Amino acid sequence: MYALVTGGAGFIGSHVAKSLLDMDIKTVVMDDLSGGFVENVPEKAEFIEMSILDYDGILNLFEKYRFSYVFHLAAYAAEGLSHFIRRFNYTNNLLGSVNLINASVLYKVNTFVFTSSIAVYGSAQTPMNESMVPVPEDPYGVSKLAVEQDLKAAHEQFGLEYIVFRPHNVYGEHQNIGDPYRNVVGIFMNKIMMGEPCPVFGDGLQTRAFTHIDDVAPVIAKSIFNAKAKQQVFNVGSDKPYSVIELAEKVQRAMGRKTGIVHLPERNEVKHAFSDHSKLQNILGYTAKIDLDEGLERMAAWVKKVGARKSKPFTNIEIKEGVPPSWLSLIEQG
Ligand SMILES: NC(=O)c1ccc[n+]([C@@H]2O[C@H](COP(=O)([O-])OP(=O)(O)OC[C@H]3O[C@@H](n4cnc5c(N)ncnc54)[C@H](O)[C@@H]3O)[C@@H](O)[C@H]2O)c1
Image 1 (tube, helix red, strand yellow):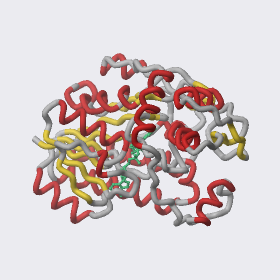
Image 2: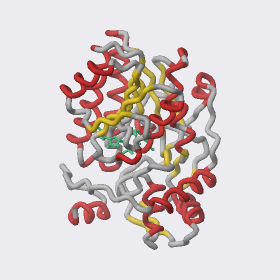
Image 3: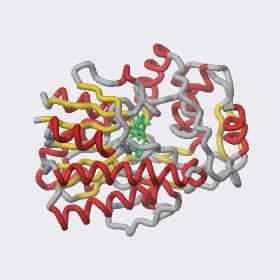
């Protein structure tokens, strides 16, 4: 019995792969290393460097391993940047997902687990819950919702069983803190290590509930054993929202260095986004346990050990109009 974890050299995927191996499930990690690192892949996992856009490669892989479970986490998840890389976003995040869904139908995968995102809710009333009609406001959220809908259609047409998780603002060990376009906790830690202030878009009063990885990955991995989870969508993560300003203070405390805050022009983003997790508690019996201070301490200890990680800058911008100036200068340097 094999499980496939796409994006398993990335942050959440590497932890999901580890949780599967801890349950003695043989695990294959597939990742194109566009945003992940080989050293994140758990030692006992088999690693295949491949893109989810390589349909023939995927079919060969499914033929060889006959996966029972597919955990699909590979994506380019820079939500704010997705407005400006629309073709890339839909190709990678939507068509890439459809390649895996097709293969899962053809090879009769037992359960397909997909990490969607809180981005599908758009500016819905908080706390967002799964019974709300999702109205995503950016191409990243639109592609996530499209995959959710495609899974529903594939279940109805072909009987493919699936589980969807909508995480939000996950942080922790293995996160790519070198990506300048996403992962606010990582961006702050990277800046603090360089002695620079934490960059905050607008007034910094946007609120998010930040979730440590250990409150997300194990619950995703174990979900396949719960029959009641099938064909369900779950929010997963912490309940308590903090403003980005509060976060910047807490991250500086965890890193043991005060470098201050620099305000950047406001960008087009949802002001308040945090969700309700009672469905996860009721069906999967899990509530997030790690508070923000403790989680940040754990991540800071790891970051100080491994140092900053540089990722390739994303330079292939399709529409430059409206790109935040701080990103434009990075793109031009790249
Ligand atoms: N981190 C969060 O807060 C968060 C919140 C909501 C949803 N998610 C979702 O969870 C998943 C994992 O996110 P993450 O934070 O671990 O990101 P990540 O960037 O660390 O991991 C994604 C991995 O996917 C790989 N990848 C990207 N495109 C690929 C392709 N075409 N073929 C093969 N591999 C490819 C990257 O190399 C990377 O290793 C994503 O689907 C993301 O949308 C994350």
